[in-house]
Length: 287
Ligand code: PDD
Image 1 (cartoon, rainbow, N blue to C red):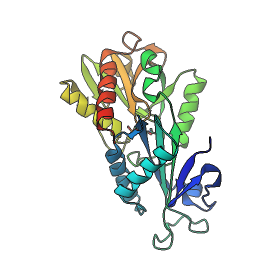
Image 2: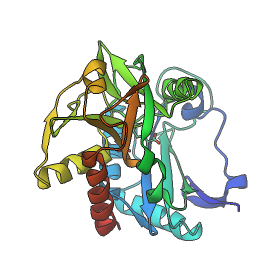
Image 3: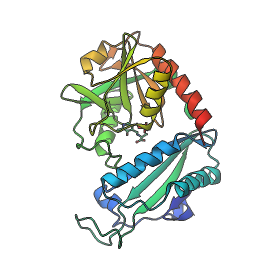
Image 4: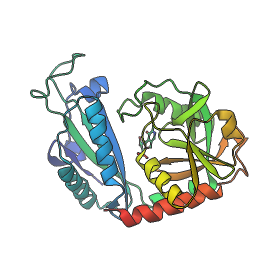
């Protein structure tokens, strides 16, 4: 089926949507993005994604071509036009097309940002069988740049990390810097030890996950203890359980790290419970 996508104010069949070869997103990875999940035709935590988008743009001095109300309307229109029940909405804003290649940023008054949105249909997104079996991960060096809090489209190293995981016959990789886990290639990372949930504190070292924010709030409401600090690979290997969070995976248990089974080697009770709470609460609050 041909999707309807959104490009700079127009809804178009995907085959007719075009962006210039001079677009800075294409030439310089000079762009930011968001991924918002859709369950039962409704958007999960749209407000959180819109807020982080604004922050990413501001940190890069990039103009925001759309206000939040209009952005919500575009998301909803794409869900409707593409009959999305469960899936994802991908949004990307770049510094636009200055008409040539130059390292210097173009004047935003002459070069408007490019905005693109498209849908990805994922029937049964919340029933991913991996939630029952858990993920296996390897650890790899985190050699990304120092502003991982900005959600940029520079995803080459995370893509390489996914390929390293694939080659190792596992599901994903955890990134490690100075002996401490920063996050997963496309998710935030957690361990559970003695009933305490441990996850790295927010800084420019990691992406400030929208799912992370919600999950930590639900954990606190459920009287679970959360400690925000870095943890090592060795600590993770000795943990009772582990999990990751992201807009597309929600809460996903991790059962193996570098070939070592974590806890029982099966999804743990904390991850399982948090996944249930997250899905239940997010569905209730979806718009
Ligand atoms: N990835 N850390 C990284 C490096 C990420 O790329 C992501 C999201 C997260 C989780 O953030 P959130 O909970 O807001 O989705 C953490 C998205 C899903 C992606 O690139 O597809």
